[in-house]
Image (tube, one colour):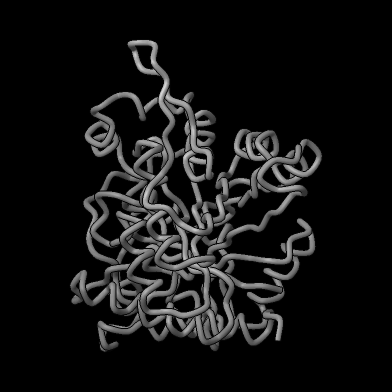
Length: 345
């Protein structure tokens, strides 16, 4: 099995943003040497515990520190951005790091309503109904011939993304619904089922994607899935290390004040009210948590069930309070335990 990584660039108690970036860099360098396939970064806004607000900038930082691994977005939330800007950003990245850049695109805003309103003041990119057309524009802008643009005067002009890159980034459509699966199939695009969100089951989406696929950018369906996983040397340690991000999610879903991510010790000592506890229990059912053997077996079972040969891990693993803030050894340990058991050698 091929393994990849989805990184939100976690920022924890006692850690600056610069240190969080260095910690993620250490994970990426380790993954590069360990043989992981991809290292993707997410787009989230207005969350003190997450530094991944700008995928193109982060991709450049990670690609510069690695040699082989593909680096990409998981994903760029297209309603927040003009297609030309996205195409130009990724054309530049592809020129700098040829044959290593993935452009994963999603439809959700990736933020709260206030931030969404600020990001979409122009109005044009906020309409999710324009999503299929925006994807086609990005595809066209990245191609050699570009696209034709009609102005209000009636004149047409040719346009393509610059700077010129000798190769093109791989474009992936991300989603967790039948809509995204159907759109990826109709446009002949590779598809990633965002199983790390939890609460949705990929069965129907995967079946739709494969059965309705029409050749386009790809001749045949190409897909993988994401999972949120926390593996440790013991099941008890894994449960403790998973709790921090669960608490952050519970606070967000119950409109509680958000903070930096909790360390393992802080999370274990944090009392939860009944509603927060209910949210945490729901996530515990959807995430894959346990010792290395248990987590690896569950991931392999998912891969077999849905016929994928690649799984992208979102390691929601809290660090200890005393851990060097420039590092993320617990995150690496989760990935190491899974690589030892699952990865193609």
